[in-house]
Each structure stands twice: as structure tokens, then as C-alpha cells.
Length: 155
Image 1 (cartoon, rainbow, N blue to C red):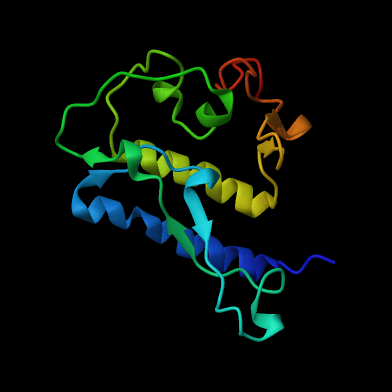
Image 2: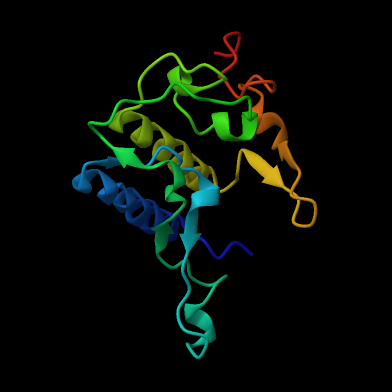
């Protein structure tokens, strides 16, 4: 049984879009992806029907280790972690990003997370015990596995 109707997903997406509050403080987050979004739950003594999996509570953004002020010069430091690159703008993927980081790249990362919410599936599946990640099969077929970049052959 799927407890998460499209209305609940839309509410979650709307709440998640509010994580861009960091931009009002003139900051860029630089690391928006599911691993840096925590979904809060109501108190333990709350009614069962108000807890997961019956409801989806509000998201909180964390993982501010890469945050910087908008005006500060961007570093061109990257990596080849395909599971992170999927959430990065194509010009910021790979070991040597092509462009300075700006607010629009946070918006792009948020958009990928919103796409996952609409599909109700993740592009990246990580094992709970090992932490090893794999792509989510056909849904990731448009990405180059080695880099996470969109496959130029995919249309």
C-alpha cells in the first residue's frame, strides 16, 4: 500500500523548496542531495497516523561543510563520485568543474531531489550495512556511470 499520495509528495516538495532559505543569508550550500536532507518526525508520543509511513513530515537541510558566502571566490575542486555528480549541475561535475559555483547550481541540485520525489524513487540506492551505493537501474540509464554526467547519447 502506498501511503504517499501525490498531495503528500507535493507538500513535501513545497517544503523542501524552502530549504533555499540559505540564499537569503547570501550563502550557497553546494551539497544539496538526499543525504543532506533530514525528514523530521513528530514527537514519539504522537498518534500513529501522524507518523511515518502514514505521513511525511517537514524536511531540514544540513551538511553545511561546503557552504560559503555568495561573493567568496569559488574553488574549482571536484571529484568523480558519480552518486554525488548526479545531483550536481553538469558544469560542476567531475574532478575539474568548468564553472564557478553560484546559486543556480543549488537550485539545479534541489530540482534533481524534487524529481526523485515526483517519481518516488531514488537515482542512487545505498546499502544500509555497507554504505556501498549503486545506481537504480533503468532510471539512471541516462547518466554515465563513471562520472554521473548526463549521457550525451541519451535523448
